[in-house]
Image (tube, rainbow, N blue to C red; front, top):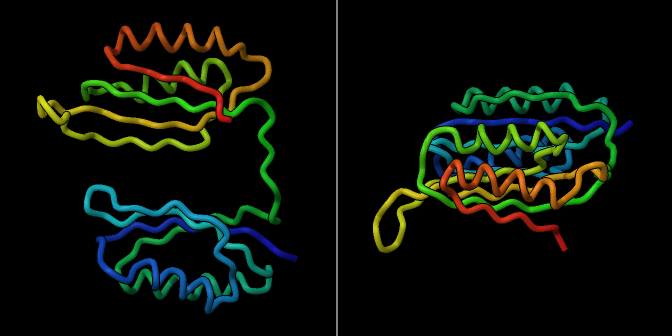
Length: 175
C-alpha cells in the first residue's frame, strides 16, 4: 500500500540542501509529490510530501536521519494512505498591502476563521516602498470559502478590517 508522509526541514541555508533532501527521498524509494521550500530569516525551511510503499518507511526515516547529521532539523508526520484533496466551496484569493505593524495576520485570520474559511496557502513578506522607503507588509492568501458563506458579506467584513488596519485588501474569486 502507498502511504504519504509530510517531512518538514529547517537549517542554515547553504547550497546543496535540496539535493540532499531529494537524494534521501529517492534512496528510500520515495516519490517527491509536492513541496513548499524557501529561505526565511537566513534559514532554509520547507515541507515535502513523500509518497512511498509502506514497507519503505523505515528506509526513509533512516535517510532523513542522515540529514540531521548534516545539520538539518527534520520532522515527519505520517499522513496515512495517499488521498486526493477535496475542496468543497469556492477558492478565493486575498491580497493585502499596508504599512507593516503587529497584528495584521492575526486580525485577518480571525475574520476568516469566524466565517469558517480555510487558509490553503499563505505567503507574507515585508518590503521597502519604492519612493518613501517605508516598510510595507504584503500577503497573498489562497482560501477555501464554504458555500454557506456569502462573498459580499465576506467582502464587507474584510473592508471593515482594512479600514481599521489601514491596509489595502483585495478579495477575488480564482478563475
